[in-house]
Amino acid sequence: MRTAAIVLIGNELLSGKIQDENAAWLARRLRTLGVDLRRISVVPDDPAAITDEVRRVHRAVDHVFTSGGVGPTHDDITLETIATAFDVPLVRDAELAALIAHYFGDRLQPDHLRMADVPEGCELIRTERMPWPVYNFREIYILPGVPKIFRAKFEAIAERFACGTIHLRNLYLNADEGSIAALLRQAQAEHDVMIGSYPRFDEADFRVRITVESRTPDAVDAAVVVLLAGLSPTAVVRVDAPISDRS
Picture 1 (cartoon, rainbow, N blue to C red):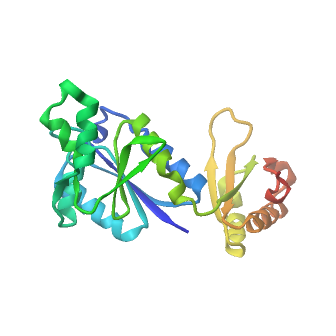
Picture 2: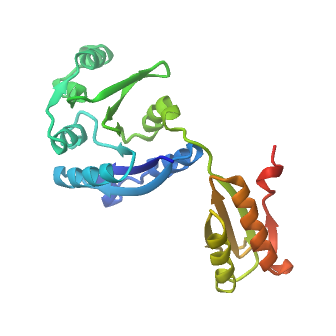
């Protein structure tokens, strides 16, 4: 099992001027790859805040994904801050600088070339799917904040992170959470699963959604059997099919 953290960087996120789209998307995408996301954090465009957070999560997980702060403007400081955080110099990659110069042509400004300044030792991942390289510094994947580009760059390297499947079944119940809490604890204790409980207060035909998940499909099915055995039939609105029965 691999673990990951997402660090969102930008004053605009903390002020509410921009609503983040990247963390929720990447959380779902990592899940499909079997990666266990442990943390999502948001920090301002402040070198000390970026340094502290990236260092902390880098020690705790296998992969870190940052979002934002890699453009040509004054507040794009992610690359230089990560270099400082790990006590390495910022160096200009000649091939990337040439790519940037070719792209902008007569519109090229010195600040455009800041995007070619990377922490020394940074891997620039080039693929056929993405002409612009993805920055990888010691398993810190430094991604842009623009959602369309963020997603395209991640998809170009997504196969790197595949590490199995997380299996999930849902139970939709007409029940009060308090009345089923003990049963949920029992099912989780008896099987290698994680159980979540999510109440609904709108016009849905159920009152609470129960999720049962594990990397072992048999464990999920067995835990669901325990839950169904302990629930009143009138409380069960519907249940996902057993994983073992799915095509």
